[in-house]
Length: 68
Image 1 (cartoon, rainbow, N blue to C red):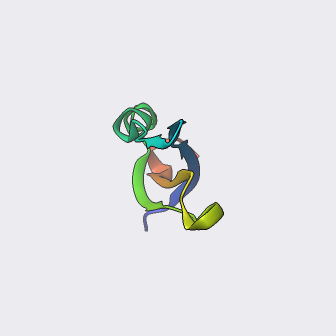
Image 2: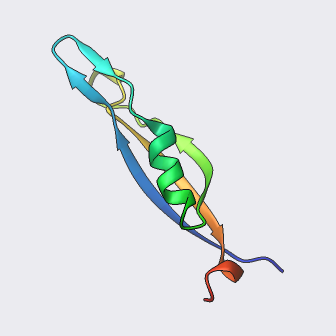
């Protein structure tokens, strides 16, 4: 039976005056992939006025690969 462990990372939108920038999602996910994590799910929680200020990535990895 496969067993997994999970963790979350927060990826904030970069913001400027009157605009929001797109975060570098690939860079964030690739830096976690080096440690064996893969994306399980992405969420955009609502902030003020219904706008998202951040993304929350739920990551998983096989426990067998970590020696736990």
